[in-house]
Amino acid sequence: MAARRALHFVFKVGNRFQTARFYRDVLGMKVLRHEEFEEGCKAACNGPYDGKWSKTMVGFGPEDDHFVAELTYNYGIGDYKLGNDFMGITLASSQAVSNARKLEWPLTEVAEGVFETEAPGGYKFYLQNRSLPQSDPVLKVTLAVSDLHKSLNYWCDLLGMKIYEKDEEKQRALLGYADNQCKLELQGVKGAVEHAAAFGRIAFSCPQKELPDLEDLMKRENQKILTPLVSLDTPGKATVQVVILADPDGHEICFVGDEAFRELSKVDPEGSKLLDDAMAADKSDEWFAKHNKPKASG
Picture 1: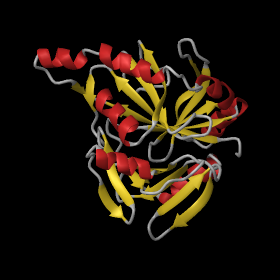
Picture 2: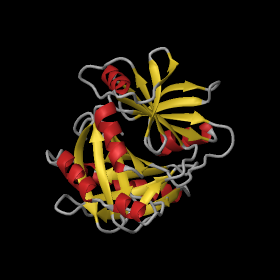
Picture 3: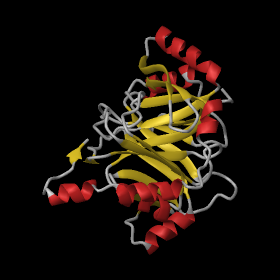
Picture 4: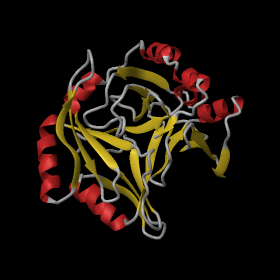
């Protein structure tokens, strides 16, 4: 399992302009690549929508050794109802705290030196007011689970993650594939995990040859496979193979073949310009305002 990597979390965004401002100007991330698609993704990367959409990868460094965010924007959809499934991303960056204060982006101190803030759309981020030299500032992604024991069986026994910390009393566990990678924190909640329309997806890579075995394992264990092994094309870039799974609470999990993904995920120096150009060309807000209509909700 040492060859598996935590890659990114997929967010659906309704306002690209405000979202870009948050990730670039508040968090201090860079646009690593930006891609536009004329029709929905075969693996539903953009959610259950089949129209025009875009994907923007943002992070503190290249996708080869940083955990990043994938921002998916469906043209014509202005917002998505939040569930209780995604509980936050924690990162260590005194620069992000300083940027938020300068830009008067709302911050709430929830523990000593830890500030809660929200990305547009209501997604929570926890900013630790410290910096980690030479390593990825993104520390963990926290997801809600309804039965911690059942989830640990899934993530550790089936997906091969290692337990770094476990607290039965607080109903939480910290998992990962390697010490130097972003961790996955599972936090027990009372009642069901509700995904609503804003549901995201967490992505990992593994050697491509492991994908069919992973799919077979999930079939044998009667686990949910949302998208069986499929090839995804990106115009002008590498084709990757993916399998999309769901854990016991319905959290979507993407496993992608590592070799082709490294090729696909190379940093595009034009990424930021491509995003800016796409935002400038997107007249949907003006059209809806002119016709006095709200954009659709996801």
